[in-house]
Amino acid sequence: MESRKLSRFIIIVAIISLAASALLYLLHYYIFQDSHHIFIYMLGDLAFIPLEVFLVVVVIERILTSREKHAISQKMNMVVGSFYSELGNALLGKILGSFDDPEQIDSHMGVNKNWSSPEFKQALV
Image (cartoon, rainbow, N blue to C red; front, side, top):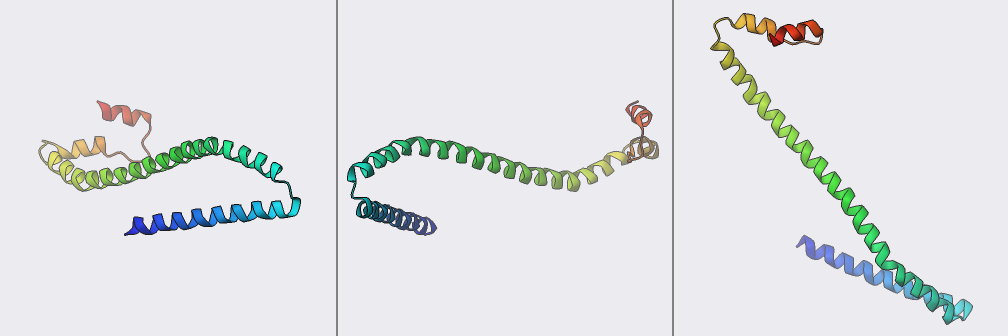
C-alpha cells in the first residue's frame, strides 16, 4: 500500500511540474512573442536531460550505497560486539578455570592502560 502512495505522489509531482513548465513557456511566449527562441532553448534543455539523469543516478546511487554499507557495517559491529561480550567473558572464565595457575595467567594477561612496551613483550612469552 505504501508503494502505491509513493507512485501516486510521483505522478502528481510530475503532472504539477509539467503544468508549471508549460505555463512558464506560455508566459514567455506571451511576453516576448518569440517561439523560435523558446524552441531553441527547449531543445537544448531536452538534450541535457540524459546527461543530467546519468550524473544524478551515478552520484546519488554511489552515495546511497556507501551510506547503506556503512550502516550495515555498524549494525554488524554491534552484533559481533554483543556476541563476544556475552559469550567471550563466559568462555574466558571457563578456559581460565582449566589452567593449573589461573592467577599467574591473570597477572600476565590483565592488560590495563598503564602498560608499557616491555610489559606487552613479557605477556607474549
